[in-house]
Length: 186
Picture 1 (cartoon, rainbow, N blue to C red):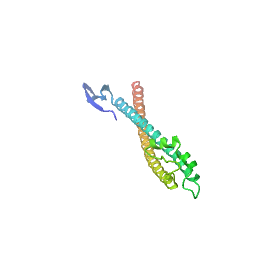
Picture 2: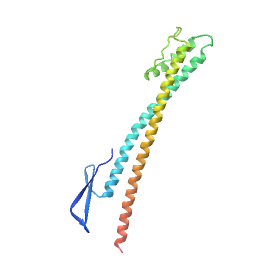
Picture 3: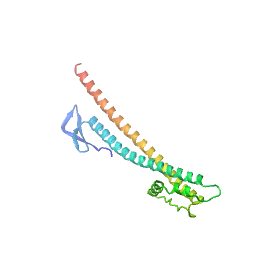
């Protein structure tokens, strides 16, 4: 959201035939041109900063999801590795996969991993299918995370540019005022 700058002529204000103007920035009257541009630049940079903060929250949430899915994937991989080579199911494997954290975390992300220990559902094939669905979700979130990071970097670059522009305008106004004061004595 950038600031709106509206010029208006100062009535009866003319210096050496040049009409004098004042500027309104987002409803605040009585600014000169440099002040108006500086205020607009600072307002723009603050708005961009707020948007970048929102992106930061999204990035943190996505990163947590990717981390959690990675932990679930590690549990599933350990469960497959713990299955004896010729045996399709094991009670040790069931205890790994049926842990409360693994199931509740997977379920919170829309992935169902509930296996019944001692039944045909606790098979290598079913665990590998669950592993594939977790890996798919993890890859999807990782791609979204990377896109959000790129967007956030873009917002930060825009914010830095807006602050830089405002700082340059302030410096130019200061230099102009210094030059005017130094020329008075000549």
